[in-house]
Length: 242
Image (cartoon, rainbow, N blue to C red; front, side):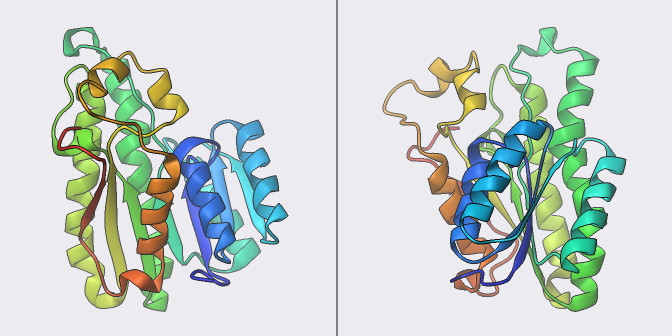
């Protein structure tokens, strides 16, 4: 049990990568706090986690709203007393050419994909620093390492997540808190299936990878398997593209 009795908060846990990470963590002994904007989805994942014999809070929340994040973290601390692992996974995408991407699209994308990470860090990090331990895993994207045509707002937000992670890791590493990034390429998720960019992303010999591949990387970073590893980006893809 790599995460026996650890408490993990996972955002965007109602489907896709977040759901896969939740189930992988539960199988390895973690108790979980899950949040997603879609209440029915996150509650269903919560039921699966409890079916693994683990405790779970499954909460509807929008991480793009600071007050929602504060509520989730407050409920987590009331229930479990601490958060050992934070996985910032929640994300949205507005797949449009730059000239068609409105300021509202930019605001919405940055609110969830970048500010959502900031809000979660502000709420969770002080407790980790007080205890002198913690693992933070921020889910970025290949688009944050190499801007994706037709998805400028998403690319910019994910690049911001990577830079933020590097800066924070070097600030808090001496205090026992590790900060790492997972940067997935094309992953078989509902979000990618609905994207008009799917054909472009899968040209050539690019293959969709299952969400469980990302969950395995998250398990590695959350557990003692990764030792003192911090300020690193794990890229999960099978070609040198997005």
